[in-house]
Image 1: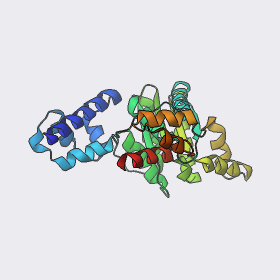
Image 2: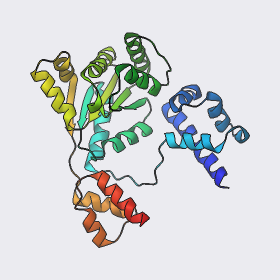
Image 3: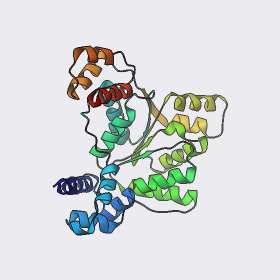
Image 4: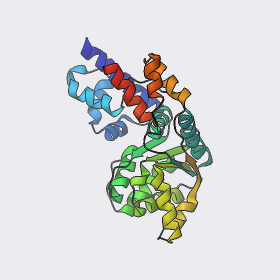
Length: 275
């Protein structure tokens, strides 16, 4: 019975995602890192051909969480920024301290909107890996010179109606990688939007690069149409998060409201639930 519930859950995830994103099963398979046959078998309910390990891998890709999201001020700011970048077909920056909830809001937007593609940067990522990750998000498995990969990204984004590319943790990118994002923006000008999001030193380092006239930084900085700065959680927001996620003890809620970021709030609530 447990395995049947898992099968049904994963099948619904795949069907909903395919419908929302309007992509092929082959492209989704590339994005997840499984074979196209696996996706087909699940969609067509050939369960004897799919093991539990594969089902759990696919479920993990969609990052399903038993957590009730609250539309905080930061959540709304991020979602509005994404809408604006898409509609204006421009690049918008989002700056938030660690634990501001930007990744959660970006992930929610990505999962809820068609023609939206998201890449989360890792520390020390090289430019070719960044380009490869963007192509993978677009459902394309292609490795060539940096120039050819950029051209392919531009071509794929320009094929979409009102596409949005989200680059999260952009503060981990090198100046060279940021210039590649600029090249992509120039190529899709008037055709798609870009969101770059990171912690405070994303903007700080950019400004330093501009002041020092570091190659490419003044050009990149002027291409960001607008910067949004996220704020700390309010007491009311924390109280609402607590209540909606099963924490009702008034004294504990008072203790949680003293915390300074949403990640600490979430961890505290989950820790109390476990205890």
